[in-house]
Length: 385
Ligand code: PLP
Image (cartoon, rainbow, N blue to C red):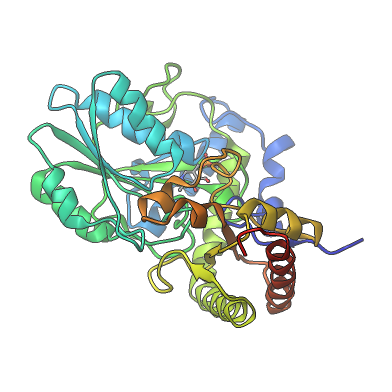
């Protein structure tokens, strides 16, 4: 069977075998409900407690500040709607950026339908939010700032620490979507100055359907789901114990290997960008080479449609994407590239490769070859070339 190369780690990651091993007993042997008072339940409750403590430790947080959720989307919704509803009497204005994930964009849109006002702060051509624009957008009604830590399409890392200082100065709650960064770059909530932070296990070699929201002590959120009093009354529903065990194990592995893995991925990233630029003309990197996630490469391949490139590569056994997994099924050019001022034709010719834990140098060489072949074929039949 033909070997497949997976270069879409930004969409999801395979569960690390060490994570699967850690999770297995919690499906059928150690299956208790953490809210039950008997021994099965108490065992599960202790396991949750340990996982909470471990995750809090990586963030420099307290364990009571970690709420387990079903993943990034739920964490973003809980942070944004939860703060909006809890602080409604104080004000009705939210500031966010123009390059957020749909989980943030659509949470804000839903609040706009309910009478909240939302300012979408622009980004520069590198996809970086201008901190001064955030400060300028603040009004007496502002109750929340939500800016992602790193963008899922172009991988740009945002100046969260600087935004955190502004949020502090005006005493405004600050949320960051760290789904692409937790486990990939070191992050500490106090250093970043954030009050809320979202993360998701399946982006760091853990299972799908598990994640958490960090909520700083003293920050109020009104849960939007009604039900039991789990997660300190902040998130109803029986906790996904195997998923949470997987999330904790995945975090342990990721933070344990973070330095070496970052260096390895940076090397592969540079090699791939250089290799492609030596083989193909009219290919541009979207976003800067510095301030971006170590595994992310987002290219615009002029005179070739991004979708066609992805399909050609798929036939060669390579999985990559156009933009994010979420926007690549919608046929509009990416809102992120648009916000960066990339013209529509170049936005439509964008391809995202995201490298990860199981990517090798050999994979990178193979992909450079196959990408060059695919682009040359597509350009040969393009009327514009
Ligand atoms: N936020 C960002 C930046 C993401 O990349 C994703 C997933 O692609 C999400 C949120 C949603 O996370 P989940 O799939 O866990 O709901």
